[in-house]
Image (cartoon, rainbow, N blue to C red; front, side):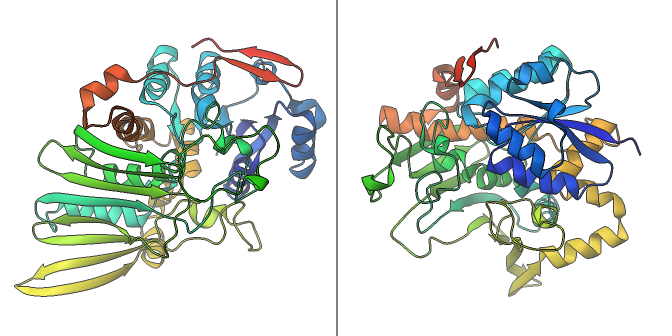
Length: 412
């Protein structure tokens, strides 16, 4: 097996989770790292044993190397498109953190860059790489749910605004310039993308949505000069061709204990999706055990089926984590579909091709289209069509970035 030599851009919290996964994947090695904060990248290099000569504050210098096989982009939302396009333009396959971008316009630019520069691209969406998603998709394709007509995408925290109530996360999360949007572009990517993928990527027709930032804010938690600039709640109703509707609820903070689970309903049966993976599964857990960086304990994706069998109403519980391990024993190749980074490494090596891989860039771009529909609907105060979203979408991506050592100007 050819060892993949990886360079990583961005050494904040999420890069630590990526590093944990890379350390658990045989034949992969992160050999270079970059961050605009020199101390941060030096500390990162020391922690992960990367020599000082392979540490950079300007990623453009790192991209001049000829001994890297691919690049892992771990910057924040409105930097995904400019940095990832630059990576592919420099001749490297690119694996980017989610969301693909904060707007559909930027997601489309990044999506099109694959073809422009003839490079491979993937977007981190952990929720679609496990048996919960595969089995739900299989049951639908086999007709076990009958005609799909409604689904719900749900994400909730009692109180957990990253960069505010969760101070170990970057303040960029609450910055309009860098973060772009709130929970719908954060955890919402996992729930919305999973729903779309399971349902076979139905074509969006229209969206009605609302967004707000009305949850209690103790301004003493904000350093002087810093504002809370994004939403803490987004909700909406989407309609797709074929008559499927999807109601969407995503918050970072809400004065309520439980808002229910995501589900898909059909004429013959329904599926409830419990404990959707949004941290990366078993490989995101450090060797020897412990908590996932920034994400707590490993989730346990479960499916509940409700429907009829031979005229009898039934309810079933499927432990997807347990069954997934058994599945991997019977079919070792399925392990390539159980983790984002394993899937990406196999794609870069050529063990998966464009027909075999899960097309995460397309899924992520369609998720961005749906998300932006909610924001545009909130802005206009009415329902919006898919065509309107595409027409009115405007780039939020960073074009000029000030750093401690100078300015980076992006061309994309």
